[in-house]
Image (cartoon, rainbow, N blue to C red; front, top):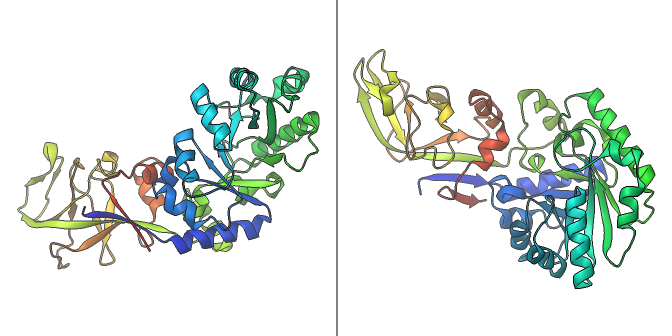
Length: 365
């Protein structure tokens, strides 16, 4: 392996502590998608002392964490498998109930197995993805409340919603008001029912959305989703916890007019020098960065030239820069901000992080 994702576990731990200190609320560490590509086991262990809860996308991810932690784990998607519900019961997982189909499936399982399930009710307050439609519930709250009131079948351990557009203050504040109306109708008074709404960006923008806990994933890694969030990250003290590096495996001269890589989409305007990196789209370098992206080498920006290949990426070396086979470049990290690379690729940092494949070695420092 000649591409590496370097992950600073102490930095992730520090970021988690800063978030918890800032919010003064319980922390739900969201570790889905292999902890945003960073490695679900090492990351869960690094924040074990700080996190009150873990959240994942599915049962398989929850089982990986359960092998190293006894913390409560929330599965963010509804479960429609009796086998998986049995695992959830036996492993003490909390499951999401987001519609009447998932509710009825869970109730039927609980009646048949005589095993109450721990559930979090999710309400759709404006994202129009998962969740009971809040307006429908507010029009007829008994349609849901009557079905969830038997503790021998369901133990309601949480109620939550999600923000699609935390940058939009008026829309998000409206969501918060709708969610509060839902909570009033539900009228849960038990301290065992965890109320949570704020994802990473809403955690920074809306203290009124903190409720009992905040659900934080991307914040743990200290990477802002775009430049406009950078100052908020710095003010909170969050630091970048990872960097993606690749090794130079060949350096060669190019004569003026010679092309590079598949389809020869880049041709040298003058005599030039190209370095070949052993990292490609099978490792997580998006092909959309062809002729648009860059890497950092010895503090210098080296443009990606030609099409990104499955296993290799070619970069243009400044004429005055001496480089050798075996040297490392920073694809993204402290000196080459991921959010800027994402902008060039016309995507978001989340996609670039989670695109890192298993071929890339994770090194923990």
